[in-house]
Length: 238
Image 1 (cartoon, rainbow, N blue to C red):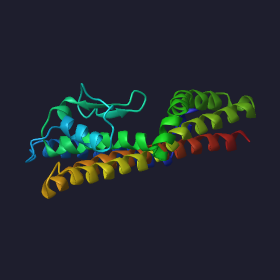
Image 2: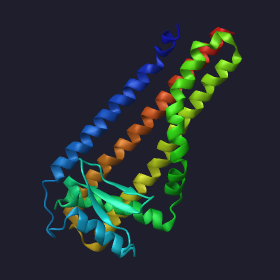
Image 3: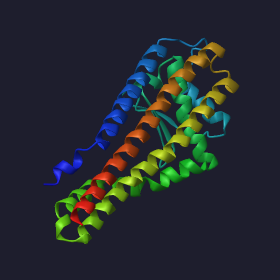
Image 4: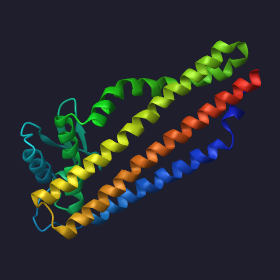
């Protein structure tokens, strides 16, 4: 049976990374809720903030739209549109302004050819493909490993496909941190928030950044676990 291969000490690290991810997600939600209750002196909404940051960078043709959901805010590089969630678009809070300016930061990255963003966008199709075929290839290789080395190679190929997810998460980190830095600088330069409000907005963005760190930790530990599983199967076959 191949299932025992998936139960080893490396699984503990995956669990720890998953716990870290859950804590990070809880913290960003808590920070957003807390600072969603802090109204800025300017009375500006998230949509207003995104529009001001875009216009300050000459991106008059990038629209800002509303999207349903909670914290579903994103910049779509394919259509060059910023979409802000219901809790950000029309909300007047330091949290909403921080999130909106962050997404505007991605639009500025796109317009200026920021390399990590270009790389991330370029590898999205192959990463999506890799994530879909990784586990089927690994399972196929492990189940039929005794039939020949070709199946072990298939399992290793599955692990490498999963490795694309690690690369994607790794490239995402500088992209997200840079967008937050751009956002805070734009907020300060544009006078969107005063000094105290800016500090509160920064707390929201820092909490959000930790979710990307956690996602990278999860993908790395999962990659190492899968590699360990396939390697151990290969050694047993020999």
